[in-house]
Image (cartoon, rainbow, N blue to C red; front, side, top):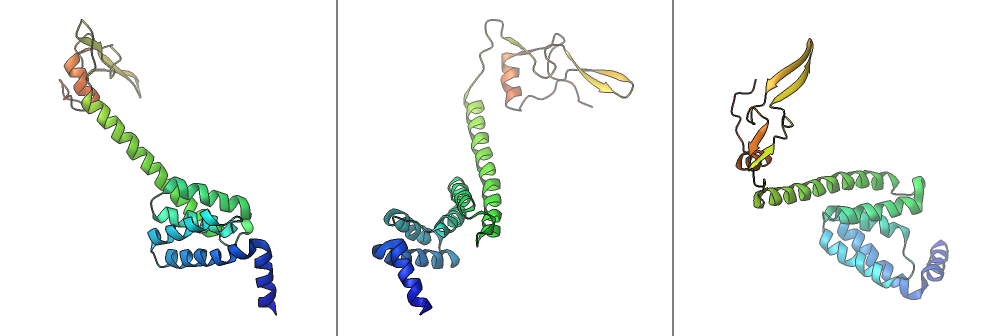
Length: 189
């Protein structure tokens, strides 16, 4: 009797055609739990495409599966949607928060790696034009020729290990410095 009531509720909530599509969701969940993330993704996308009313748990499963596919931004979006819809009382709340935190950490690492790659490409391929003089103000000593550090007994003045005595670098030295390849002219303590 309870099963019949559940089926009637499902037919009225999801519509007769959507009930058969819940089978795709179940298959996707089984594949997710078996570690077959790419295959699970196919079934979750089929549910997303074909159902008019999406079950709330789909956002959790899709977000979790996206994490394992290294689609961290997508994972963050779907897990946030699950938490937004279900709140702290959602069946998968704790697991969703854990996966969300992990996805955010991995996304930050991914973005940082992308930024580092762009910086490396730009600095490896580009030369800074220093103009007619062929000299630029040293960014280490700010063109002063010395580096001023606060010490216990007042300021310490250290000769800049990279620039000339006027706080300048040649264009070649500057380009090496920004790539981290310029060796100090004097030993650094």
